[in-house]
Image 1: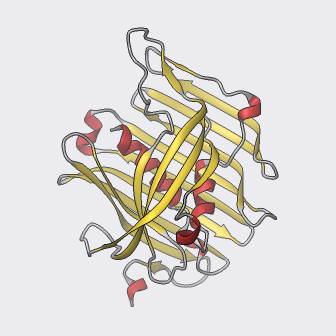
Image 2: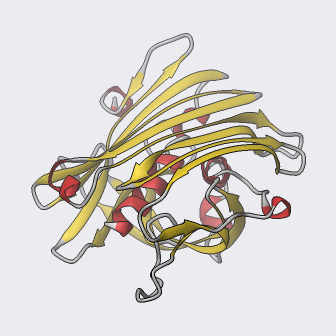
Length: 287
């Protein structure tokens, strides 16, 4: 289940991208569905508004159905910021609220976009029994928020070239600080799938994370420390592809084993809505 949640978090942070390709101001709506066998076990949705100078991303995921037996897991995240003079998106504010089972959290973070240092951090945590939070030193509180980091990556017009040999950047997620790495050096053609709106050539990226500060640890002396669901350590593979009408890349598929079979997550729907003009959907984009 830990892998499922980590992958969901990656997917909805990536979902900010698609609206950068049409007009100067527009909104994108994306949806992903996760399947385990014949069951839908999670849904991820995202709404984003972006123009030449600003962006705002909001996303939501919820584990549902048979997966809820393991524990109720839900998250609402948003980030807003500016197009910085460096030519990259930089956040002004980031907020994440939700729960991983009995672990509940709320982070409200303000940033200085020039150096990505945290200027204000309001945090509320409700920990599981026999766990404790590892505080982050103020000097370590800097880096891209998760959504903005991924937004900058997949806005890169040279995605395949620049990430073929790997890429790494610093991420501040409120509860943790991590070093995120990306290696995109595999390729595959995906056939038409009834659960997905995508088919065609893809680039496969391995995404991993090294925890630098913060996180949650066990206080039970009899229990060996394992990767916690709250940590940002990841070992996931995502398939990226181009939808008709877009110059850049979108996460379109991922899969992983969870003990009893395999979870598959598909891009199940999307629409792009200019502030003025017709709505672009998965259906009419193919005409």
